[in-house]
Length: 597
Image (cartoon, rainbow, N blue to C red; front, side):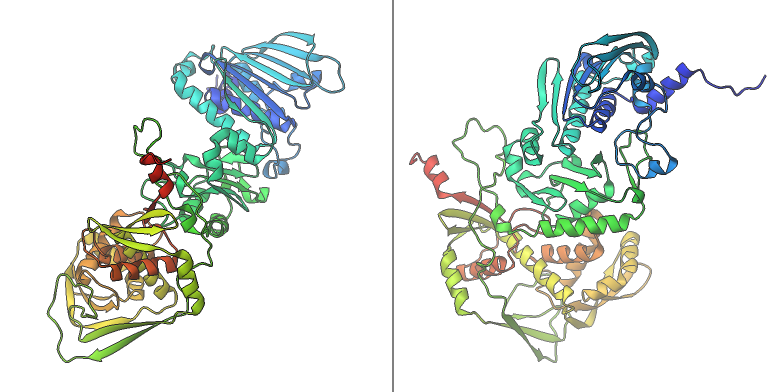
């Protein structure tokens, strides 16, 4: 007798259930999607007993008696007719296994009524076997009652998590489905309490009902959905909701495109809030790569990434000054945590720039026969000498200011108060106290200047009369070898000088406050530990951070004004790592703190 045999249908159904019904949440997802495919505009879900009891009621088109019987058969579906349909789907469920799988591992009561019938039909099923059929009075739609989930599969029952964990998964499933189907009302009741409730009155109402007013007011609507500003950053990627053709999926490519668009706005460990609705030709995606359809595969991932990122980039090109964080009201009830930043609209127009962009900078070179000896640190002076450079570079900046720019300055009307702890810059403007971090201000300026020079191919290079020798590790050597051309783009030309040594022969003309050698080591160090998009960005950020004005460095008001003028000219108010540059404290909050209001 042969070893291979056809499995009994009850066994094969349980195996199929293992793929479709991983837990109560996955089962509820299947039931919701069937209701949505049945054109339901109202879905109510009641859950008890850690998800082992579920009752779902919808007002969809329902099923007649014949379809009701077929719905619990394996591979029975109304969604596809030909093999081509599998790759051109516009519905949720289609495999025809959900109800059959659920029925095989529970005690199921399935009732439904269509518009043509005055009564509905109800089936009682136990572990896949139909026990009874009866006519019942009910509204048009379908009602599914699942009791004793996994009662006949103790091994699977054993792997159910705690009630908190299972209920959290269920809430997440209902939330993601409700967000995509915002014209359908959803109610999720856990142990007698409504925990999710939407009205089905549009996407903004849905966002308000699911996430609250604070999230809604900090979202920007755009072509692909919604993106959040910096006041609602989260600690994980779980708040990037991605939908492909209306189906919620986890897509690393789309998540990466969204996160990359926030680049230099995000602090380490922070992620944006975003809702992305992407419509794409069904033939360009494969939704069959995962049993529960959680993951999709694109035929051209690079194209999808570029498409999403370009659109999100445009959506995020908002005036950053409108989103400055403010200090919380100290008169709120017990503050047990560090106050969260709350967005408060600042009336500030993009065209009201401090500077005209008609700025001309002239750099004058004067030859000198001798060069200065190597110095570890170089301070900013009118005449700046780089170590080992045979040229003294004198910087003279002539700024052409138009009359309208003077008017804009008067409109802004800010006053420099001074420094706090030689670290923070205090400014009075528009009935607010603004606090600037001087290091981050200068870092952002250097980053923007260097980026602008690179994009315009204007990075000037100077030959070092005495090359600078550096010693590197094997990992650093690989980084250098793999990026020699990019380093050259930024003015660093290197020659190998032994197994673990290089000579830096040229350096960019740059505001080096640290030595060229220390800056180059800093770049290599950050390349190894930071998670940036590409090597060019690593160079930009590393050079800017290393050479920016440090904390506890005294500045006079003239130097402060130069910094602030340049910062407002660029109009960027986070450092390249995403930290805020300015925090504001409105005077009316001060008045409340001192009991004046």
